[in-house]
Image 1 (cartoon, rainbow, N blue to C red):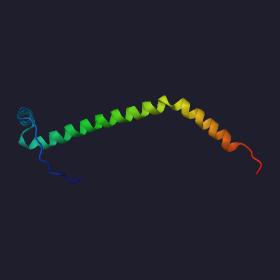
Image 2: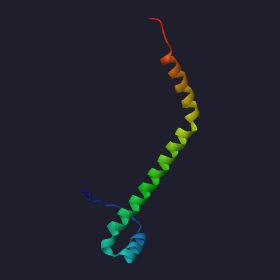
Image 3: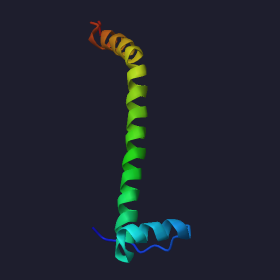
Image 4: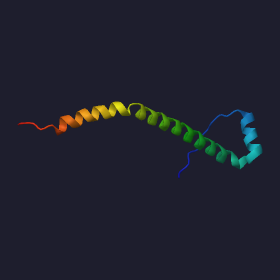
Length: 78
């Protein structure tokens, strides 16, 4: 996967802590992993909200579909 070079600003104490734990060359990897974890969390929350929304309207949707089905399958003289 291609990479993009960024110029970002992060508080020095945070950078120092990351470097102390992962070394100078581990900084990018740490930030990439942290971003992936955050993105996964945000996406999961969004998907959960969508699912809850669909579930909350499921009964209403079934009723509309029943009415539509009756209108479509109704025999008509043309």
